[in-house]
Image (cartoon, rainbow, N blue to C red; front, side):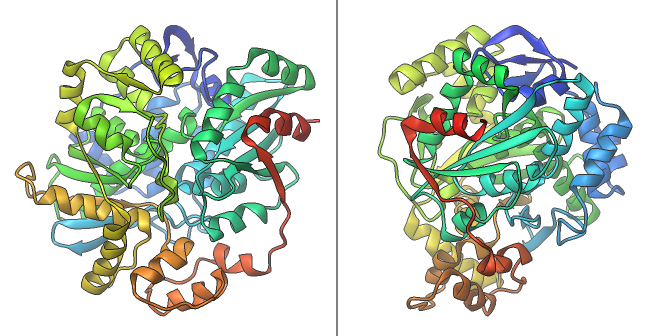
Length: 496
């Protein structure tokens, strides 16, 4: 299978090359030239499989230039009981007869990004060997919180790869910041920028598309790539847990093979929910994908009107991984709906130049057949955390709370088919102690983030993740701060 750019169908490369490059030279994102199809027989085979075996079945459909042995070895290294604290990797938790939580945060950094970022380094390292690339790879990452730590942990001390992470200085939680600035590894750099996530992401996109700068780095022996979900190798592993959750529902006798299910996804950069779209296109019986946003509700407006407009106030919220106004992976969705690279190029150029674009009404109608979009404000988010705890004895982080409330809103509409709802839980509540404790009405006084961990444990059934409790004694190793205009300078300095 080949992959082509969303902005030029003729720009076609292999899976290994796609994973190394991350983003196309024309600024587009790589997509599979065709989406593999599955059926009930395929699903039936997956029912008795472990998560690792399910991952192999999905990945082998897309990574056709990798051998079966290479894919299995990558998966074996990624999903181990040393890295994940639950043997099922992504456990499905029942809260009521028709509502389930898919916990995606049992990896080493307690966020759903581990599901992909424990595997991407293995896929990329294998790709470098397969393509016999001479230059080292410099991974550039913009993070709104969770991606940074997950990428740092995944790529730490991987041969022939250097990783540089940029995060908004005032746009992550205390625990998220501490996770990044204490990161060990001879090949890692962490830099705070004076700006928000969109500033970081836009800055990196410009750097990726700067041919002069890329040539300069190539002469130094580096090729740029990304660990953000713009990299297909980040997105592909996320398709697996939709299939896995569905299989778990069948095994629990909640549904029969072929029955439809709804999924609600807390959404920022649109990668997580796009993986659900791919699963649906592959034949997984998904009814609706509910796109849940916080106060930065640019996606809610887009799915309602067909106009994507980033020219709006940016809100710093208690669900920071969703504090995004430029949802990069939406470009992939629009490509699959239109199959028109010229139209995608036109819309993305309008977004870059004017901050907005409008899609044709026929395309919007197609999207509205699949996607329901809603948003939840701060007050509702806090109230939902309290409701989940008091009603179900379940402690959720703010991102999961946003998704849960959006799911409840949908269940009250005439469109709801009274079928099982799976809400994706994307982070451990321990990563957002202050917000969760505030929602539960617990007075924390001037307690620091580590004392808050211990306080929250009294109200949470799950143990404090080892990776978070160990931060208290971890040394701060990264103190760099830069203006958003100076990201290229910092990259140059890191790659001397």
